[in-house]
Length: 205
Image (cartoon, rainbow, N blue to C red; front, top):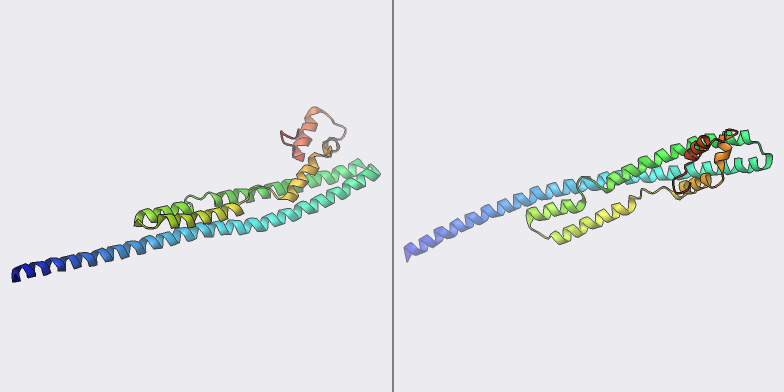
């Protein structure tokens, strides 16, 4: 009996030691994976947040610029309708197109930054999936949270141009300004180049 009890106690002691070892391994693994999860998720959201905030500021500036250009062009167009001074209007239109191209370039830069923020090297869902796989825990809930984060970022990452810029582009292509730009040289090549500068697309030609 004594021998059996001693053997049992020895085995229970080993079991407790193994249990303590397992607890430490689990604690350490959870701490390591949690730290990596937090760092990766924080970086993913922070990078996207920086891009979105900057994009919002840039879009506001683009919208203001488009509205200002549109007002200036409309004023010049009305003046031209009254005095028929085509040289004066051509000068305004040419300078306006330079400004419009700058807005287009700014918008493309913003759109590219938002696309990068929307499609990172590892999304929040993938971060959660790795964490869940490593720890074999609650993958469903974490993935749902990751999807919610990605959905919020995706909703803010709208690479489409502002309405003001769209309206300005439409105004430039719906008023026959290519004739004003080419002047007396109304060759097919000159008109095609003028339409290109004005922003005509294949669908609008």
